Length: 318
Length: 305
Ligand SMILES: [Zn+2]
Image (cartoon, rainbow over all chains, first blue to last red; front, side, top):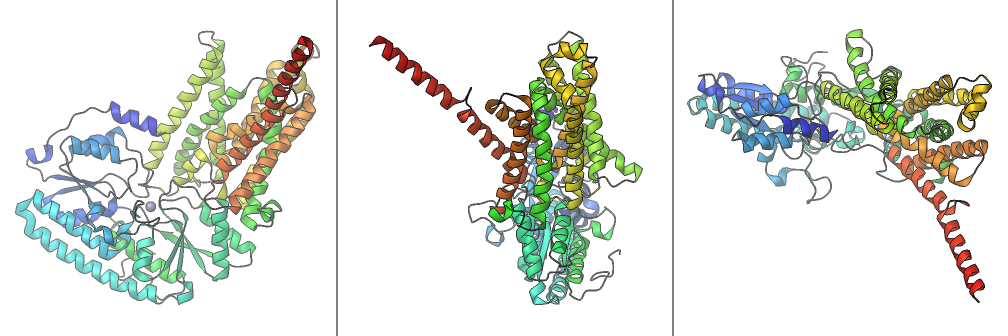
């Protein structure tokens, strides 16, 4: 499969259209790879930029293979905001091509200081890329995004700074809410079992033990032993719920529920969490704040904690 | 390890083991006929040609309001394009313009390429669960539910039952086509039936070992059995037992050691068994060949003395 995608890339024209948007008097085009970057960028830039996102709702960035059209969009952008930290495994080549063609690019996730990252397999291994799960870390990323947008449109830097202040205040409120509702889960049940290892930063910040069926990337396949171990954990700690993810197959999670049921312990599907992709654009769950609100509220309620059904701003659907 | 082999390593391990064992049994048995009839390449092409059908079934399920992740639905889609792929290869070969193996290779790459394109459409869709599709490429046996295993075992079981019914005419087709024709057995229909059996096995194996490795379990046990025994009934029995045993051992290993993906482990166990057969085969084995060589040299020395 990758060779086919690569051939498609090589066949794409080497044209880089320099700053087309600006030349025509339109605001500059800021193209983000994932919505967790794109939505905050749109909010921070406001009318000073045109914000677009490459990967839509429910798309898995670990596995996504860029198309020719994607490369063309990257080559048209005035600023490319990608995540880095190894998240967009197969997009990297296309982003490097865009950067080589003179497009400005920022690896947003890599603006976070290294010592704040989690290295699950030791300090020389790749970091866990899912940093948007921690509001404090993603606030640092928002600072970096705002700085680049302000540099792109110096005339708008005052409004970008105002937007950043409002964004960070809302993130701080979300952080306090998450600490409160996740802290209300009975201590022995503070275990989050999900389809893949996307919640390490959430767990670290709020004191949850996190177990993903698959590894950090959805490219790794779980063996039977992993399923057995997790069923054992669910039964031994009487954990009431496991969670699916919107961008990852649900099959493994269903196998866990079945395995626990065979041992006489009832586990329910606690809901679908947003891990690597968020809700539909234009909805509250389609914002980074709403995505985290949804996750935190769903987890707290399914594991026996106290949380309002509609989240910390009363804006969640459901 | 021992508890996994005895089906006592928990519900999930037992479900995965049972599903894979029935599949291994059918793959080993059907594989003998596929191998002896010279259809191994076609089997590979058919397996790869399931990809566009699976992706298309996923895409079609959305407007039809079906669950796009339902395994029987995806497998049905895969069956359709696998059949089309084989028919295309056959048509291309019988046109006489390209050789058989080239025709098969063209069909394989065309259908697999089409599948890759469709997958890249699927991956950009705003629906959950596309990740389940890439699981069918390399298999995702560990997360098998009882319903998945039942689907897999049912398809494999049907293939096995049909093989039992057709074993005599199929054997005639393999060893004495002329005799078969004289007895009124239509070779074309029998070849089509063998193709159908092969397709059933490929489809049964997709969820466990994926479309890249499924052919290995069709061909490797048959090739190993061929090294060890001569007569067809013995070869089929041995190959089926080998396929089932490799599946069982592979699942048990994956259930007992960390980080062993189930499908790939099964295939590696089967390959290890094949190497063993290659060493030990009484007629074509490496050890037997070495012995014969040594005996020849001893005889030559004795004659020279
Ligand atoms: Zn992830």
